Image (cartoon, rainbow, N blue to C red; front, side, top):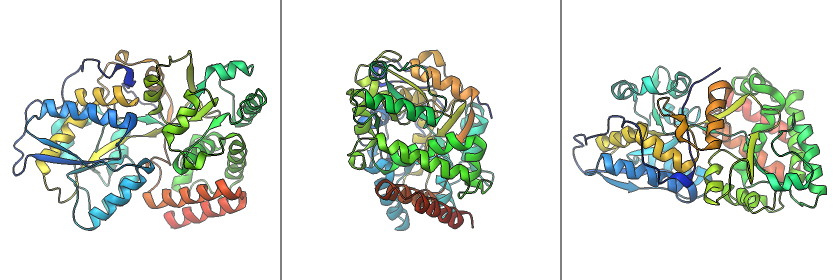
Length: 425
């Protein structure tokens, strides 16, 4: 599957003048009722908050008469926010719009009748003409579209501290061919005096590392088959991936269960680790630290996943019963606009979902992501809502979290089989 796209950016150029045309948001619409919009996200700190602030700035410029209400919930890479959101939706108290990952994560809300169909909105705003067809397909359920994407992220990225690898006699710009070769390099780095060469964080970052190992050992088709039932979770390939993942945990920092993603990435930035597997929201952290791409740090796909793009996208919805529906639609117009996407992605390190933004406007890492998204096979991220429903993803996350303590390969594989049977029937 090949896809064209435009892209991304680092926080170091957040002050760049916003370019491109706006997507239908030049003048305020007739909002009716209270002129405010409550926007629910988990972007409460760090580069994510910087990205949200950049998007809000454009919204305020496009719709100066609408008050933006920030309803962000901190912690847990969105897990705390999702729990709070579920309580509100069940109580019939939805925000005007909420952040959700595009893909399978939306199915839970759709099946519960909690999201409005945005298909005609997409047509009216011209979004079907500027978003990639592959992305439109991910947003579509039973011929209806339920969210507006603000970006595209890549999950299977290894962030590399070049100096540490050079000290260990390893070429930092040459990715190992597969997981076994990477483990060999990890052993070299550890022998050079780095106690924990692979920086890792809390449960969701563990699941992200695990999904990329599955992707490396099963390949794109085998990995995708896990979510359709075409690949068995009790297969030898999954066993190999669990074994590889277990070995990788031998090289991580001992305090990993208590660290969120940004703290784990900071270990690498501070020169205390050689590698960190993280989505490209980490790019903003490196830019903020003043590090230069392909000098102090570089990136490559997780070994064994060259030619594969592990995809996720942040998007915004229109809940059923949104108290301020018209201002919410104005927010969605800003999210999908060229100006909004450029401002947001320059701050967050991700790729604009629109295909009509000039990739030359973006920094070096994002240039690599542009090319990869255009050329690579695209698969859906587990840890970030694109591959599996919230319930299925939660079962896998719990099993992976337990494995960090007991290292019981058979127990993890059995739990994964049970989770798949429960999800797929």
